[in-house]
Length: 49
Image (cartoon, rainbow, N blue to C red; front, side, top):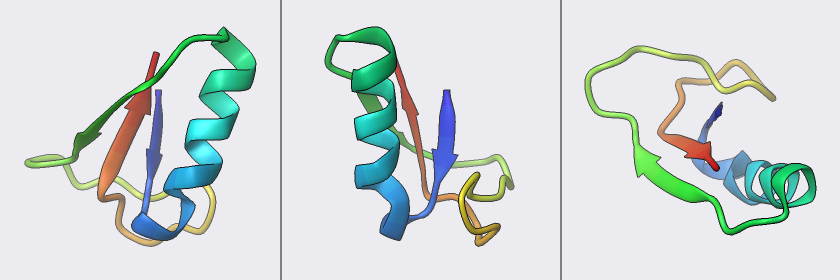
């Protein structure tokens, strides 16, 4: 599971596909306050397998 901002969504998608070799699920982060794992901005999406 990768939390990411809008800018890093494509990178997170690539990482999940490379790691798990299946299409990832992308969901908007609603209630949680998380940081993007790549740049520390506020996360807008969670990308998971």
